[in-house]
Amino acid sequence: MKKILILSSVLLLLASCQSAKQVPYLQNVDEIPADVLTKTTYVPEQILMPGDLLDITVMATDRVSVQPFNRRVVDITKSSGSLNSDELNFYLVDNSGYIDMPVLGRIYVQGMTKSELENYIRDEIYPKYIHEVPAVTVRFENFRISVTGDVAKPGSFVVPNERINVLEAIALAGDLNITGRRDNVLLVRVNADGSRTTARLDLTDKDLILSPYFYLQQNDVLYVEPNVSKARSSTVVPPTASLAISIIGSALSVASLIMTILNFTK
Image 1 (cartoon, rainbow, N blue to C red):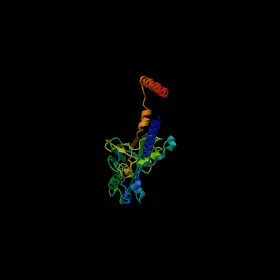
Image 2: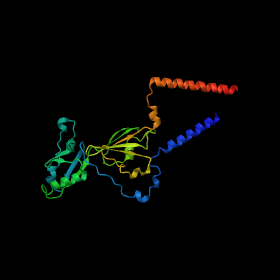
Image 3: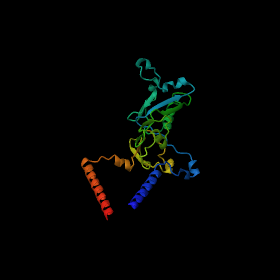
Image 4: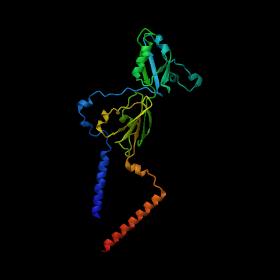
């Protein structure tokens, strides 16, 4: 009996140690050579796709000359009392991949990067319409990522600076629950052409910070799976199976009690 208790204790201790090793992020990250860490991290430029909401601004020293290329700010708060005038300044990429700009008309932007669109607009305006090279800036107004699954606060999050990595996204979601799998986080990415890409990320692996998926793109979704113990605890057992398990457990308990009594009577 003592041997069984000792063996059970050892197995429980080993299981606890194994579980503890699976919790920390970026384990042994200090082992990454300094020259690798100091290299400039490549952050992929975001690709424009249908559903993106863009803020496009055209500026020049002669503000009057570029005024036609900017959305006119119309104060509609007095009439409706609900909408903000700034909401009229954004461009929605429609389902066909187009935006409609003043003067320039419909522009197919799907698949472009922000810098490519900025260059395109600049080349269309100068020197055809104005006599100086304008400054063109494009920003996302709905850069959004989602984190779901076994985390504290699943949800979608707007990222104002348009740059976020996996660990920052996990932090926005309140971190993983202790039962969330850190070694197999699923990344789902929608590409500009509508296709999807998936990748599995190991948050405990030090090389995660070197992964091309470390920085997220707009509309990325992270899904955290529950570990085996939580998955098992959430499994619904049919009533008949539950009754059978209960009967078998009771029978084993009675048999164990009988064996114990017989051993004592010898």
